[in-house]
Length: 582
Image 1: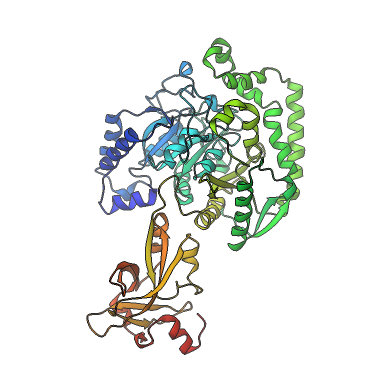
Image 2 (image 1 turned 90 degrees about the vertical axis):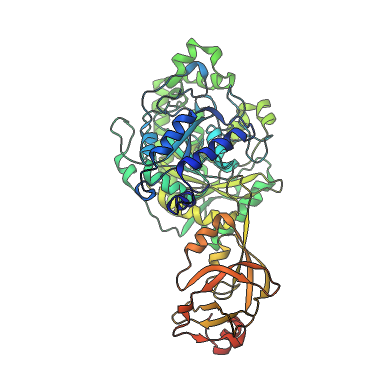
């Protein structure tokens, strides 16, 4: 459920928060077991939060009655935080800073989600609660470490969720489940109340069905927190709009799809899409970014993971997942000398990336070069996990913002995604670009069915005419050309360009008007309608075969001062007659 559509229902009093939460809890109880949840908020507490909103206006809170989930390394008051390790569990008395901000804005938490234990992994299989299964095909990994957070959003159980992202944990699961995953600028979201992985690099991340929803949640969640030493006042206040004209992509020789020809094809197609959207695509040297990525696990930063949970692990070795214990134990060996040398090397690499940034405004890469089945990862857990970090591990080390965005599907139906990376503070600009890419590349939200709405166009939205992009940019396709029942008049409206007609249903004197029938993804139909201004609106149009579809119709007052062109039978015929540009 999209946040804006849910809020629209509340404003129109079509639903109440209590009704929605009842439905959410029912859906969760009946959903397939994909090992996505660790714990649920008690029913009485969820419904009490919903009832508390009954006396408030939906316009008074930006996330009024919106259900969300929380990765189980982020605190929710009164609910155990386990970080994927039951023996580590504690019950916090207060919620994490970001969680509390969301609740104060009207959002309702419904549960804590599964993760790679101690947020160590990009696969979603390293959990005593079971390997979290992909929302499209349970034999495939969900991605990690924020595995459950991605799956519950993609499955339509909640409207958004929180994850964390140190090396890609908020982006890889987004790509594998057809979601938008925002990895904010470091310090933009407080980490107070988060079990750290690498404390100097950690960032809370946001999973949503659409980029517009992620921007709404980000606007609420960001803010300076004096209790968090890594909270950044400038990062939390920066909106970061950017005019994207140059999109950098790695040189072909630096791309790695690990033998996945389908992901390679989809990336090539997305590059063409971005070009069609108006960006200039330039190849850049990706090597400094790759070298930075290697430092995260091959350098001393793994010592931060040991710093966070090493003492617990030494006391309770059997409580820690074997692969997780192996990785974190490596953090005992780096020396202070190695740490400083790695810091120097990172500075050198950051300087080397400046040459790339001089030629681009945004970097676009695959979010992951391929995807694996759960049995493949279990057979080779370290190497395959490392492959998934090829395009993600460098982002926090270089203090960049990133948004994972859906970008298509393999022939077997498995999702593919790209990541848009920008300088610190560019979060909102990246989300705006991501919205365009998502609309152009996919017609499905998460793993929800791709419902379509047929809509009749009689004027400037028809194929090849000036407003047609408002359909094609949303993935709409032309179904057929036909005519209406003989019940309408057509009028050339004043104003323009673009010049537009108005079609009005009449009780007598009507004619059959030429129309095109377009199929629009239901999830994006609302945003299309929102862009239509008076005197045009969406109503039901009767076709010559007697069927009815949604379509652009004109209010009767629109005929005032307009030229009646009904006798011509259609807008294209009128354009030919007057010899004017479309």
